[in-house]
Length: 522
Image (cartoon, rainbow, N blue to C red):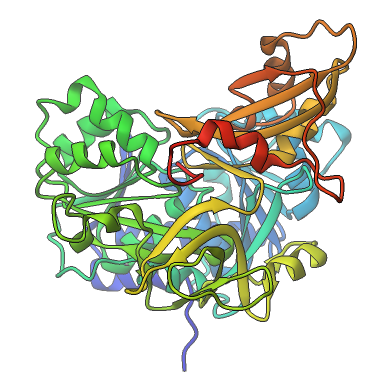
């Protein structure tokens, strides 16, 4: 049986739809034939600078057509893509580069100067510049990489080979790299599809979710599987998204709930013709019911679907489909759920004793799927703690109802989801603790109407300390990504509540903020 290879999809689309428009970014457009040729030539260029099977290629860039080309080129060589979070601080990027050990680093115009700072220590890893400006640091330009090379038509690795290392937050204060394989990424993608008929050729998928997130990268693969045009936008701009939907008759749009909220509240949304939107997808955090009702009323023609999963599961492992998005129907309560397991996934609810819990009983959500990670890069102990007998221990607490719908009620890990981004409190606490005025700190998630959850810091200052909320936030922004920094700070003198083993009882710290919410996630 042939292995699943991510590189095969763009080659297949080039055979089936050679002259159909494949991808657009700002002023550039390519057919599937042209996109496939670009990936073959880039693969030849990467091979010429030393990239071979198993080597890592780090990408630090905003969404673009060339980002997609690089992914397919990397996969053609059986190499491993390492998409880096463009919202990280310099220190976080530096850590991930040292951790992953890339053979080549790819940057665009925005991040070229940052790589200059990171390479000040003498690192001689080649840098490839895929922007339109002048390459810095004697970097290899995009055009030079493709020039006079032997194209690579082979499809490269597949199956259980590592396709990508996607970094997620860490409980020890550093991001950790999740190793995902070709088969897992594709199975997760296919399991989340809505099973629609063959789409028209004059409509498109809009990709605004960043490519360093699975959802963004998988949209690029999805467009190749069905031969549908992919339009890339570099950053989230609700006004620009509305303009694109109207002008380009966008059919499919995937956003996190906070983005959907900002989109529907934008002044342009009221009178815009959004009738082309047929698939409205969301995930990464629960959708506030009020926002969802407004969206359904504004987009009556659209089919809404929510996906739940983690980086460790290659994305979606449960799906709440269009039939369950009826806020006034007999099963309206299901809107508070994360849906049912997808085709390639199983869900268990596990108690503290490790035993399965009956329907309606809360426990930790365990996931076994074709998309489960190979493990954490260079972290065997954390891999063993998360991946047990083939099951991912999610760190989320929830229950299954009698119909198999999953309801998430809390998190057993100290993780906050703010605007769809995962924030591990240990990373924020580590940064805060380095401020000279901080004696002790604890970071928790509290309800926030716009972002779902807000990063909130509780700080015990040292005697005589003068640091203000603004001082502490500015201090954190110099060390970690902005979305991980506290958005509010509470000072207190009393010691934190602790368990018998000396751990801070964050559940007690969170309780006053979540009282009356029904569940401790938002």
